[in-house]
Amino acid sequence: MVTSQGTASVSFPFPSVWGIHSSIAGRTIIWGTFSIQGGWYGNFRGRPIPINGFWNENAKQIAFDSPYATFSGNLTIIDDQQSRIRHFILQGRFLMKPPSLQAGESGSWIATTDIAQNQFPVSGNAYTGQLPPVGAFLTSNFLHQHQNFLGRTI
Image (cartoon, rainbow, N blue to C red; front, top):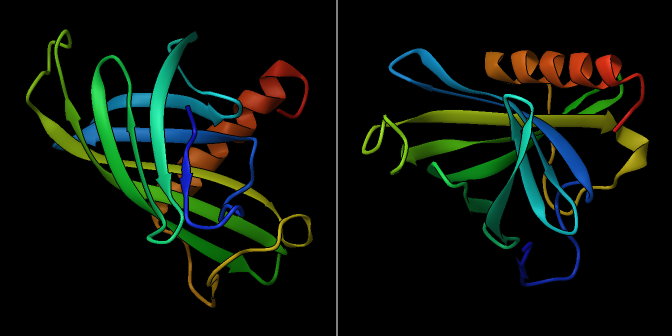
């Protein structure tokens, strides 16, 4: 379940769908989407997987568990003034766990979602004048391809 600590507002759009990518030593392990709605769900290889998560609003930190890995990370918000797009970027580390064949291995992950700046006011700081990390463009492209494939916006 989604839990929030501190204030009732949340720094990212809720509900939301995120493109996610993770790798161990440069090798892609996870490439898919996850959604934060009434519950959290991952969609890796076309199957929805329930995820238990925790959001700490004050620290802008997230932690969540899938059946195969434990993730933790931080939120960064970047506003692109030219396109008027607000990028929400979660990134951090993960640890694979049994029954995964990679149990005990760790790596990095990044997840992104983006919306028009006027659709969601931020609670906290949004950075301007800087580019998101490369992984943000990859996951954003994946997310939009996924939405176009479904023929609708999620």
